[in-house]
Image 1 (cartoon, rainbow, N blue to C red):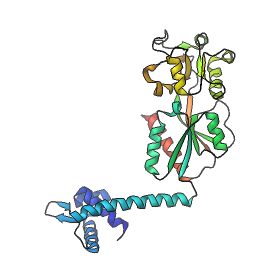
Image 2 (cartoon, helix red, strand yellow; image 1 turned 180 degrees about the vertical axis):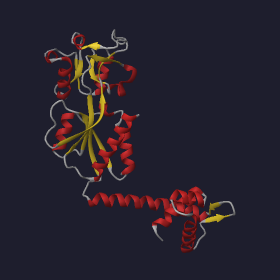
Image 3 (tube, rainbow, N blue to C red; image 1 turned 135 degrees about the vertical axis):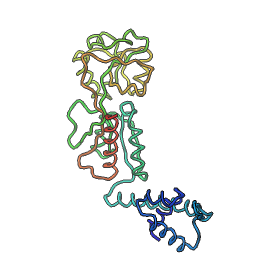
Image 4 (cartoon, rainbow, N blue to C red; image 1 turned 90 degrees about the vertical axis):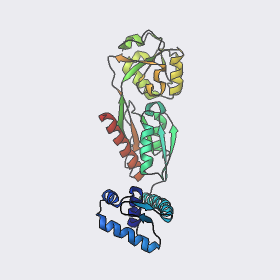
Length: 300
């Protein structure tokens, strides 16, 4: 008995028609019929009840179908594990991510990745960009999904762009700007400003300086926040306005309004960071999966 016999049996059992099963398997009908009869002869049981027009599973056939599917799943898992072991990778990936920046695409990427390598466990870590880059360098992380830093990437880190987001000013629905088509940087500087903390998010503050000018470095902030949810809560409670990439809307939704900044700033780029030379199968599949999703999203 060979694996192809089991796959042939499953196709016939699911289609309940040899002609359709043959088309699905891309084989001709007579050899398929012969393979099924050979399988029944080897097992010593009838797997199908046949009439002139129908073919149905016997009770033995239903049991064999259930066990055959389970066996092939184990075989597929064994093949994946063997290939992975052959190139020396861990069965677990440690991945850093910025929740607000990746909320609209990371779940879909990870679902697709899990379908390709169900035996690889992914552990997510909520981190700042600085923490992710440090984790990659020190080997604590295998990959990181983050906003591309304003400064040059550390040596040895490669960055794969996935999504770009325009820069907007987030305000409450009751704010006078909520129906504006755009807001000038000079106007923003006259408002109380809510921002991510300077200590934890230096890249964000370099982004602010690029968008609003160097004056922002000397202005007192209405509140400094340590996470996306706290930033959203601060703006929603009326403590100030916030200049942020539009990905914030994925988590804040209609709780806030988003007004384009004028003149338009260069968009924020969100992507995947890996160490150069990462050849492990799971990392390559993660990279390919993320890129495929980004390509399909940009083309939609």
